[in-house]
Picture 1 (cartoon, rainbow, N blue to C red):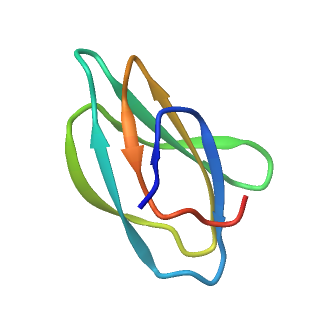
Picture 2: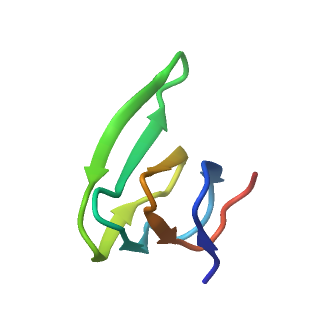
Length: 79
């Protein structure tokens, strides 16, 4: 699974219903997940801890925005 430390946008059309997201942060790291609603980006989650979680992705256009040393891993969708 690729690891990122920069902003990435992926579209998950016919992929799995949900995917694993792994996060690892420095002292004050944060990962903001945004979903495109057709007009604007909507914040769907703000993660500030290290660990793993399952996130819903099917039919979603998502933008992952790390700050302050946060890194994250998730299977890539379409760019």
